[in-house]
Length: 401
Image 1 (cartoon, rainbow, N blue to C red):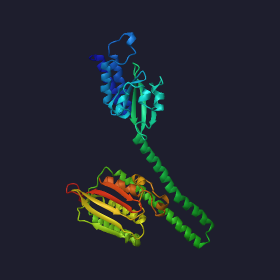
Image 2 (image 1 turned 120 degrees about the horizontal axis):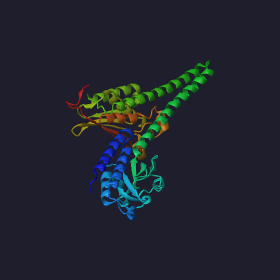
Image 3 (image 1 turned 30 degrees about the vertical axis):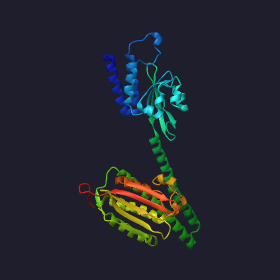
Image 4 (image 1 turned 45 degrees about the vertical axis):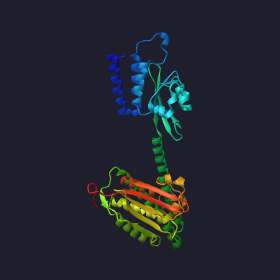
């Protein structure tokens, strides 16, 4: 049945309201306003039915219009009538199953918190969202909002909050870990200062304590430097570097610097370089990347074993850089988390080696900024290989360094 002029004006007003809500309150509120208002208008536009049929399901035309509106929403939307699922868009059916149409809502959404809200006659009133954990997959987190239509149906909108929860968790862990990493050396420094006050007349003790304090202060400085470096790299991640870098020359320079710092272990570095074009990159960041991955191979590889640095062209526009060590290796369950900030396979060994826990996180962000790819493979008892793909420089996309 065609909509009246009044109904068309009502739908136009609802769309305008939804756009305003989207700009002010976000997509969830806009979606609920749009769906709920459209349903109410379409239902109101239907011819009046006899009293005995007033509690029946929506008319076919209304159901079809409701289906068309809800299908335009990319997040799961359901319509509940008489505690049963009267309608569900494609996203809802993909999440809960094609069988949910006509089912009791407690069967369709198998979650105690959802059932309590949906069976409550006041649940259509404005209120806070219901948080659902484990719906769809065990680690998924959803936010459920419910609104009532004037005709008695209720609109259920599910928003996936898995990503935002993970981001919040990373932020909380980062603050906690950074605080811990800074507090530990600071406590040592303060403790030794207090001890020095009582041992001011003992030159040997004073020298030893001052040495420890200096080491702890430098540890704090390395951590702060890495945090600032990570912040700068993240700030630049949307701006691809545009310089042409001779990677073979840069590797030689990094090796010379490592030889000056640790001549015995750096002597184990072997370089295998095939003829290759320059890469597109940021020289300072690529130097930092090389220091981090070669330095890790030196620290965690067994003493006297080779650290093999190889670069070769791969495909038409990429260069592969790999660093292989002969270490104790890393168990498979740790590999996906190695680039997380402050994640350590062996905390005591990492701190003893002077690591801040940010090295591979920095490497990951440098690779992402360079539009490359990072891969870490390891075999327990054999060793670890870090592989990085970097794009080559082109005449139109790179300047001379």
